Amino acid sequence: MKIDLAVVPVAGLGTRLLPSTKSQPKEMLPVGRKPVVQYVVEELANSDIHRILFVTGNGKESIENFFDVNKELIQFLRQTGREELLESLEFERQPIEYAYTRQREQLGLGHAVLCAEPFVADQSFVVALGDSIIGRHAESNIVERMITEFDRANADVVIAFEELDSASDVVHYGIAQPRGAADDVFELQDVIEKPDVDEAPSRLAVAARYVFSASIFEHLKQTEPGKKGEIQLTDAIRRLLKSGGKGVGLRLTPGERRFDIGNFESYFRAFAEFSLTDPHYGPGLTEFVRSLLGRQE
Image (cartoon, rainbow, N blue to C red; front, side, top):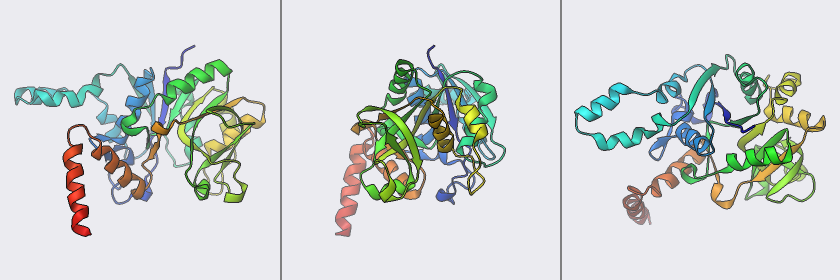
């Protein structure tokens, strides 16, 4: 059966982006012309996902408002002769059914996914983290490829991975332990959460996209909270694999770099790249940046 359902966790507080996230979700921060979460939804829509469940939390109401059809705004633009701006609202008419549930306590990503169980039931589903864009301007079909491989391999979990440039960065990510050669598609033996550099089995880092069978929910329920009282999704995946579940990893292609909007450095880099490559504003902005850098020499 074709997977057309995605769970998008957006309940995190975004503390590493304070004060920008004090009164707005980090997922609503603009990257170029669009908020982060719009890129995520457009990527999913391009992979034939037609149902999206947002797992929200306190202060995330603007995400729900954003994906509503705003008839008053449309009418205002037409009445004031600004029809050319209607194109920027095309995303409102995507054939997607949106649903929302709340993670009432900050108990980790695993707990956020578990909050989706009443909606997902026994279906297989995608998980796409709402603070990560895959590919410049979300030009990626990684989710479509993952769903195809999930069906072909009769897998229980498929995870996207990105190869890190530096081995020292493995301490920040969940890292793949392949079973055999780590080709573009490979069997997954284990996932190690934030290993020490000398203990990392590879430089392949989890890249914010997953496909699961509904069996992940039982493993989440059996996963003990960690030191911070949070249920980690990686721990549940490890339980699934160790119990005999089949896991598959897919590498991102070079053009599918992950943009993780999790801290100011990565956010600034993403905003700069998306803005400088904007088809309308990019060339002029590029000249401005060159002149600005020239003044500093």
